[in-house]
Every structure is written in C-alpha cells, then in structure tokens.
Length: 406
Image (cartoon, rainbow, N blue to C red; front, side, top):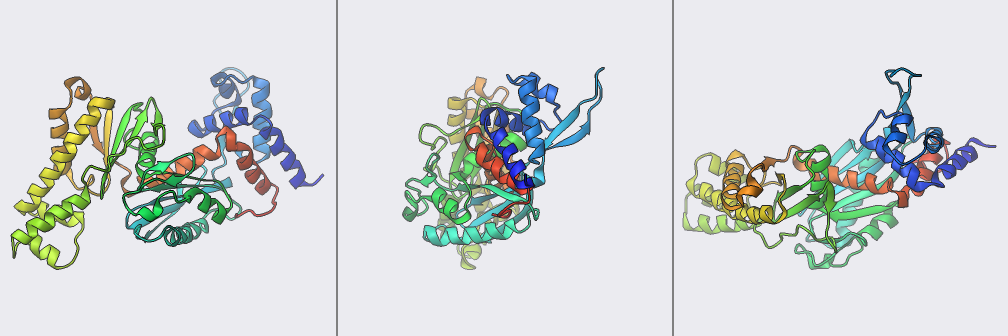
C-alpha cells in the first residue's frame, strides 16, 4: 500500500469521529504539552479513544511530540503539541483605506505581514482582487510543504456571519449583500470566514491581548467610526444576526476631522488652518498638534473623548464587563485621550459596574484585527464540522501528495 494511501486511511480513521478528534486537537491547541492521560482526564473520552485518535493524528503529522514529561511516579509520558508549520491560514483586516494581511501558522503566529493601501469606496470585485493579491504574496512565505487550511477576514461593516455577506454597510452601498465568503472560497479553493473587524479584535484581545483572563470584556475600536466587540462568558458574542456591538451612529475619527475643518476655517493662520491648507490631514495630525500645545486641537480631542466616554459608560452599565479595551487609531492616540475617556466612564457609569472595571489600551496595536482573523480561521478549521476537510488537507501533505500549496 502506498504512503499516500496509508496516511489517507489514517486521516479517514480519525475523521470518523470528528467531534472527538476535534476536541483533542483544540485542547492541545489551547494547552500545548498535554499528555494523553491529561487529555483523557480533561475530556469525556476514554483512554482507548484518546490513544487511537492521537496515534492517527501523529501519523498524519498533525500532532507532534514535545518529548518526555516529568514522571509522577509511573512511566514518563510524552507531551503533545500541534505541528505548527504543517499548515497555515491567510488572515486579513480590511480597513477603510488599507488592508493588513498575514500568513499565519497553525498556532496563529504570523509568518509574514503585509499592508497595502486600498479604498473601500471602490467596487467589491476590485477591492477583493487587490486583497487576494496581498494574501497570495503572504502565502509565499509559508513553509514550502505547508497546506492552506482556511481564510479569515475582518471587514468594517455589519456581517451576517453564517453567509459571510455584508449588510447595509455605511462605507459603500455597493457592498450590500456582497458574497465575500463565496468569492474568497472560489478564489483560493479553501473555506473562508468573514466577520466584522471589531469582533475579530475582541477575539484577539481575549486570547492574546489585554482581555486575557476576563470572561466578560468590551473592546472598543475608535477609528473612522466607533464600534464594539463583546466577549460574554468567555465567548465572542455576535448576537442573533451577527451585528451585536454596532455603534456606527457614534462619531469617531471622521467626525473629529470634520469638526477640525470647521475650527480651522474660523482661525486663519492657526496651526489647524495650516494643517488643512496642506491637504487632508489624519487624526494623528490633530493629536500631534494637541500634544504640541495647540488649544483648539486639545479642545477637539477632549470633546471627542467625552462623547465617546459617555457612550462607553452606557455600554458598561448595560453589559457589565470587567475590562474595556480601547483600540483603533484614535483610541491609541495617547495617554491624555485615554485618561479623559476613563474619567468620563467612571463618572457616568454605575458605581457597581465600575468598582473593579479596568480600562486599558490594546497591546496588539494595528495587528489586532488581523490576528483575530487568523484565530477565527483556525477555530473554524479545527471545529468538528470542518475538521474532516482540514485533516484531509494536512494528511495528504504528510504523504507528499497533491496540491500542497493550494
């Protein structure tokens, strides 16, 4: 029997109990180094089932051994971990004016990050073709024998998660009901998952960011607009149709620039007027002027922080998180802005809701949405309903089979 056939049979054997095999892989993903005995103890699976499934996964090259663990009195056990370089996912956050993309290994660690200018005002087909080109360039930096297992994408619009379609996006009506998920799957030949970008920021913050260890967290992105992502009881909360956390009516960077233009026109010769005369500025330019002592700019930032802080205070009262993570360009604009937001939230929300509340900046910076997209793709690729397809891709690679880079 050929090596390809043997590994394929092993993959099918593991895939015959997708739920059990998926549970094992996801446990090892979250806690690398577990032994078979520990896996059996932490699941409802028997030692026999665990042994059989782990053997299949080791043979397929999906799991690998970390070496002997310290003995607790009996025979030393071997730890297990995911073979991170065995496959990869493509992940991207599509912003209003740019895309930030990466190829990430099976642990979600970026292998290469690329950023390109893109304008969401363009047609979906044009924007997605440019996005696909950026993703393809990232894929070339994955391991030579790694296989693409899925795609995760965050977009700045309400998304119906089950279909991967944007619904009534404020950025461009041409994107309404556009089948982004289907488009990506046809282009790359692998499963794709699409979500709102702030949901993916929340996912990343809860796993590897400031919200780690918090079962109830609120992630606020203060960019061109203001949006929220919710972690409820340790899980990303999308709501019934996938639009939980939508705050599109709340002003963000776009409104700040609009107000700054009005102020600039009233103060000819002032720093703001000079800034706008040189072309369309960015929010960071307003922040810089405020830090340099320009009073109109400082006042604009204070008003923006107070308006946003009052909205966050309402969300804190309603949701009662233990942490609020502030992300996005305006959210990362400096300590003064964050301090003003904190003051307004603590001063307006219920005393019980703020008694132990932490308000912190995102440590992930501009990568949070992209990292969340990678985690989304991996979570879905290793979920029970998709596991057979993922395992087949990885197992075929182990046999040196067809289409390793697809």
